[in-house]
Amino acid sequence: MIEVIDVAAARLALSRRALPCPGCGSPLRLWGRARLRTVRDADGVELVVRPDRARCTACQATHVVLDAALLPRRAYSVRVIGHALLGAARGQGHRPLAAELAVPEDTVRSWLRRARRSAHHLWSIGVQAGVALDADALPTLERQDTLAYAIEALAAAALATRTRLGSQSASLWSQIAVLTRGRLLAPAPAG
Image (cartoon, rainbow, N blue to C red; front, side, top):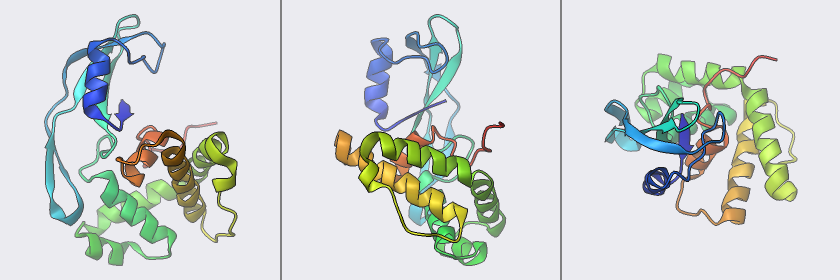
């Protein structure tokens, strides 16, 4: 799975074989489309998407090229999930967040648990990207919650990316999805 800010530019890069395989670095080529999926965005808007698929010309691995506004295997957009994570980092519980977002309570609770389990890993991604782009942008305030540290570091790195690369068109949460390679709610790697 490859998260991209600009789907049209990624499709063009695939047609030119200019997008590298995340596994081996060889060029990827367009290889059909993934299955049709419906994703709920903010304010209850439903998005129907069918992402491109790519296949490596060397190792033959396949990858889904996913818009950064979406996360893999999630029925809600990264903006909705990000809003819940930000609310939790500010101290809100899953019930008020679920009511505010019109999302089932169990779903929001699941997002928060997953993000809290991998908060240290998310924080390290944010800090590494922040240091590489603009070390002065890193947050320095004390936080009680590791999730708050993680969200703050990821936001600082995303803002530094915007400043450095001039990618103002993408939402902050889309840039965070790219920084985490779509693994915002995925378990932290072992070891």
